[in-house]
Length: 161
Image 1: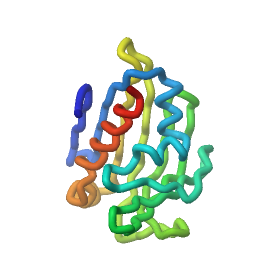
Image 2 (image 1 turned 120 degrees about the vertical axis):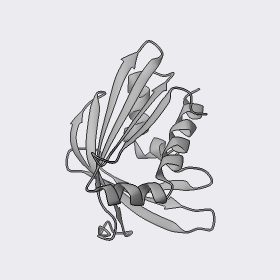
Image 3 (image 1 turned 120 degrees about the horizontal axis):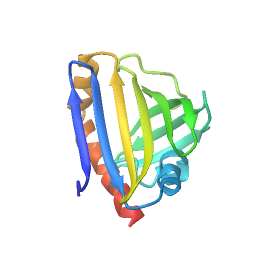
């Protein structure tokens, strides 16, 4: 399930580094990270589902989505996209919010930088996540972020086979 995956936590730098290799070309993997209809297929760890409310994949655009649980519970989040380098990298600020995109200040925001590199095996995806504090990082981990994100990345691996 976790073939070719690294998940490192750096509490001193308030950061997480994730690396995963996919047996698919860069443009295909890029699409699965940047197109809502494809993100919805794998972003949430099962039995949860991801439902995009709106996505505008461009600089300063927003991806607003819900993580929908098996009992119908909904937790909303958004990504505000920053710099985008087609098929190479993009970054964004991730935050919990309400269904209208109003940010929930009780949770820290995090800056994500996602890179895509063609390698012999296919595509290496690197994810650098920077939190505002060690407490914000700890809060995310306590909510099951590591297990959930690894599961989502593994679900994408299954789709790409």
